[in-house]
Each structure stands twice: as structure tokens, then as C-alpha cells.
Length: 302
Image (cartoon, rainbow, N blue to C red; front, side):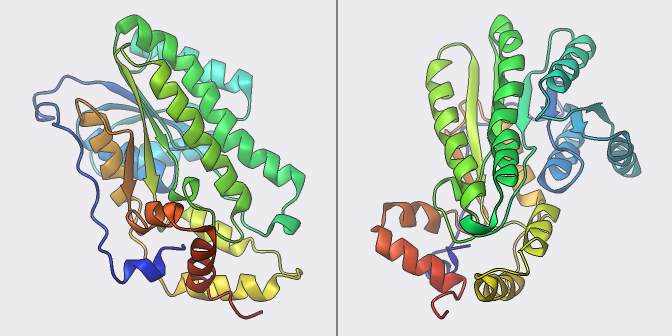
């Protein structure tokens, strides 16, 4: 969100990955698990990869959502398999990975950790329950799934783990504190993991979307608390965001695909509005980044 001022001056090119593997027409099928695949970035990624002949297994929290994903793929002539998964439930994660191992003869080649939640609200308005859920889904759920698929990847001497993070993991903005906290933690965890598995043939990288038009965004904006001392700020932020025209989740899906196809993936792939400005704001003095964020959301008048 906070990039809107800088964006007027700086264009937002997507980073180019390393050399790709051979054409998807010549590439044997590889299995990729996409968590949170029933909507938004996850759904777009599952369909994009299926169209490139990957063997896609998308996770869903309910049978109904799983059926809708399979039907959406079938409508465009694609095949996506599904497994039920709640990343906050340790047993559910174990059962899902066991099922995946059985149908893939030893586990997936790649895991795209996309499942996430985006709690919105000022620090004083977000309950401990909501904050805990954000950390469970966005951080601990990612850790559970990664821990379960890593042994198989190590045995095969190859694999790819793509963490769908956020530019909110670089720069925090008003009313997204707990979301940004979970993404900051994911960034740190993935950096450590990447260094620990170096040389194993398994690569871990981060995809950091900016402001993207997804159901997660719409729900977050609708969830602003109505009765709050920050009501003015919420209304200003909602109006400001409504005036923007963010790209759709397909933009991120293409970036995930590039991260999977690159022989030597980058540590980070930044995509969408803010891909240039967010890293710059992280380097700027705190007073400057605070001013830009508040100006972008028109929060300077209370």
C-alpha cells in the first residue's frame, strides 16, 4: 500500500529469473503441491502450472471447495488433483502429505506454500485469537508443510520450496501489523532454511507480491471494525484502496512459475505494485517510510 507515492516516479519491472529449464512441452511431469489453491493466488497458480503440464495437487479446506477447483480446471481442459488440508492442524498436515506421498511415489518435487490469512485492523482492534490465527496459518502452517516434504526432497536430491510471502514482509503499513508480523517472520525463517539446505539439491525462495486484487484483499477491507477510535483511518484507507487498480493474481502465478522453472532460483521474486518502492522504503529512515505510508493511505489528518 505504501508504495503509491514512489510508484509515480519509479516503474515496477518484475525481476527476471535465472535460465529456465527446457520448454514445458519437453519437460517430464513434475508434481507441485499448492496450498490454499481454491481462490486468489493459489487458484491462479494451480491452473497456470497445470496448463504447463505440471502434475498439480491443490489443497482445499473443504470438499466443496475442492470440487469447485477441480471443476474450474476441467472447464478449461486441465486436470488438478486435490487433497483436504487445514494447515493449522498438525494431523491434517500429516494426513495430507501421506496421501500425496502415496500418489506421487515419494512426495512432491515442489511445494508452493500459499495458504494465508490477512487480518486487518489497528493493533488495539485485533484480538489475540485473530493474531494467533495469523501466525498459525502464515508461519507455523508453512513450517509444518515444509518440514513434512523436506525429507523426500532430500532423499531424491532435488526439490523446490516456494513461499508466497508479501512485500508486507519488508515494510509494515498501518492496520496490517499482525499480517506484516507473520510475513516478516516467514521471510526470516525462509532465509535461514535456504542457507541450511544449500548443497542438498533443494532450493527455497520467496515470492513477495505487492498490492494484488484477490478475495483475501476484499475480505480484509470488509473486516475493518466499525466501532473503533480508528474509524476515520479505516474509512480513509478503504476509500484510498478502492481508487487503486491492482493487477490480478495471475501476475503472481506467472512469477511462481518462473521461480519453479529457474535452474538457479533467486532468493526473492518481487512482483506487483511496490516491487521497487518497498525495498527502498525499507532502507529509508523510519520517519520517511512512516510519512510515505500515511500519505499513501491519506491518514495524515485525524
